Picture 1 (tube, helix red, strand yellow):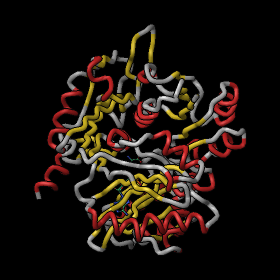
Picture 2: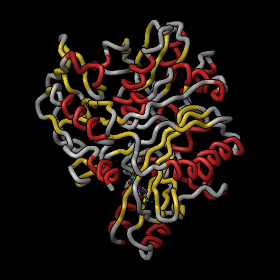
Picture 3: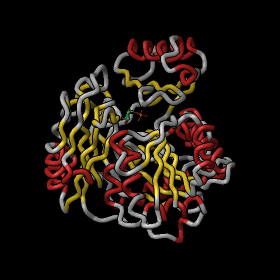
Picture 4: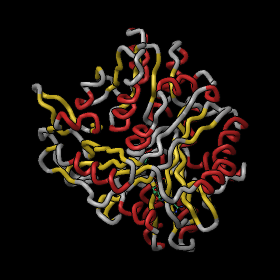
Length: 422
Ligand code: AMP
Ligand code: GLY
């Protein structure tokens, strides 16, 4: 089988490594991929958002199956286009990807179908929004409607900060058209949990839960990033809470999308907050999380490609989706300065003995050398019987990866460890 994976980050590398375990796979093309994946996939310099180019390539190379991993090509209809060209694909069509690409859509859907989430108001007029945030209860949360590279959420602790956020998004158009509308919502408190789920619109199977570490600095200080590390499972996500989520959030979401004529097939990501009033949805993503995937897939014991194809063919109920009961930890090594200004182009050296455990997010090959080429450079994952051991091993892996100016958080998994110890 010839498989194509659209995307270029650590998440895609984790997906590729897992797909490679299937013995029927002859070749995996990564579009565009990155230099650090070159041992696992054939990287082809076609951008993830160049839909016509992706379809053309897939047709020209007899691709049997495609996996579209990032949100933007999904929102642009990459799966629709591949399917129209006769190439079965994993991922939602554009009309279902809207669950991530429009917060107004997802909030209105949750309200309509009684799915627990923060209370909210929608504005398409900046003056009305500015008037509203003057008296909103604090902290208040301001969100751009559309995709904003994970930066469209501002938690305002004063009315001035809220007003500045509204101005930036709606008047200065910091995120372009994504800011034509905004959502202003209630601030929720509690532990956050990420749950990825396979769904074909008929069946929904949650994967092992995980915990992201979004802030740049130790002890959750500093700026928000794309994620500095993850652990799985998430200790706060008990069996009881999982059952409640299935009944009140996961299945209702799948059915709501069907009822709206937007059947979701692919990986649905639930960003949850476990509040004192029960679990609530913070956000939906229409794709695998990054770096959640780098801890979730290493714990998957079943064959990923088999599951993905079953999702596409709407027979998810027929396949086995089994996770190990071990623990995983992923520590991101970033370029110092990330998520703001950072230098790249340093030589990246990954010791052979840890190659299997390293997912490369930002690297390129130049003159035969692997060089850093992004904010997040690699994710180092370890799996072990206990979380403590997984953390220790993941940090050991980081000590076998070298590049100048590298930066990592030292406390990935510590909060989870404390939660286990009570
Ligand atoms: P997002 O970009 O939607 O993932 O949001 C970024 C982060 O903002 C989330 O992971 C939460 O930590 C936080 N956040 C978003 N919405 C809320 C809310 N209503 N209350 C509290 N925190 C929130
Ligand atoms: N780790 C958060 C996300 O993938 O959106």
